[in-house]
Length: 90
Image 1 (cartoon, rainbow, N blue to C red):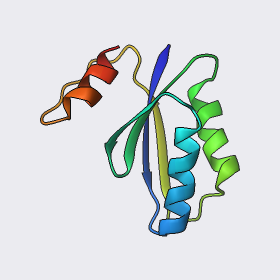
Image 2: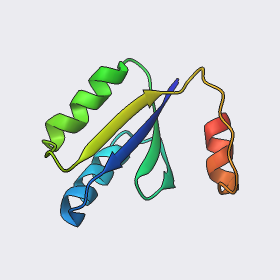
Image 3: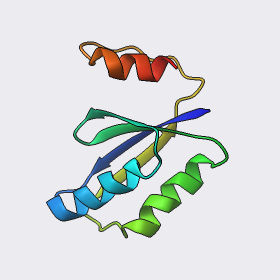
Image 4: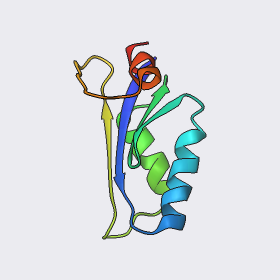
């Protein structure tokens, strides 16, 4: 299963909640910070995941979104909750 890092900046709270709810639709997710999440998915490319977000919520020029496939990437952290770190290690 691939792990994708989702980073977004959406100032409007209602639009931000729409983004978060869409992330949760993936079913397997972890919240790193308020605007940084990870999802797990098989079968979709990074661009397809990005396009899914932008189809759900047409981004405005004041908003940002980045999707990174971090499946084979090394990562390190400080002070992540244990359950999040364990989830990322799976």
